Image (tube, rainbow over all chains, first blue to last red; front, side, top):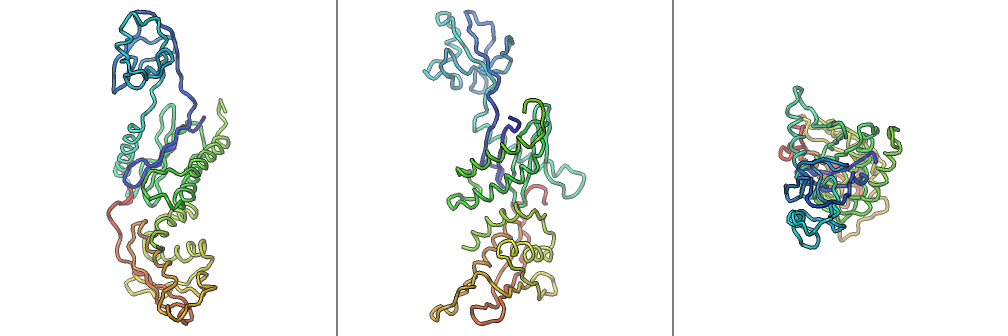
Length: 219
Length: 134
């Protein structure tokens, strides 16, 4: 999966569409006996591994499920508190699944607004007059590409650094937006996009772009 | 009605035609006549009657595809049938930060030889500018 996600941000900086396209992240399930040799802590409403990396379980991984029962924040789906449960020797041996925590939709909204502000700052920092905002952000594991239309809508694509053809993908997404979101009479401008045809066509376009992009290892 | 069409049509137009931002009214007029009208209605209107200040001009359409099969009945003889086009132009330009006033001057439905639309530039809309367009 070389294209990880697509975000569409409206003029005011609010996230109006988001699509995640990556394969399941690395997860590890292990059986533990008392006492737990990993140090767990509660952070931001999630139970994370603070110290004690081993066997594929890294610092920062969150508790995803206990004994097959999914964990929501700091409570299991049955309503038990995770840290209390794991502190009690009577509950062992216990099988816990750890993995990288997924972003909640609130967090995505906040990140999109922050990116909108950074984009504006980017264009103001420029020594040249009339510069565009941030077009590309590169890290060692992904590249973020951004395209702003003349009307202020931003299309953001997170992809593998080796993936090519993202510029034409961004233009294609703009066309799909104008075809399936704008021509839908029930869609109001600047509101979250809830159009099936838009979803479908976007996924198709991502597939086409992935196949046509650079042929790196793993594709 | 035309206004609502215009605000959505502009994105479709920009997505398909790839034109950049226009920096003055003359450029805008050119793009509207040569690219936009051609793309959506298949005609290329002429641009004439520029005001001395360069902020007003007329689009002359020899044929208006919207009224090819239309006749105005007597009880609606003062109806501006293609007023939709004025709304479309106004809505579309507003989305790219230009406030304009668009009016019909001549109309073939009323017996004039050509259809004439007069466009006047009011001002550049400065609030809600996309970042980087200062």
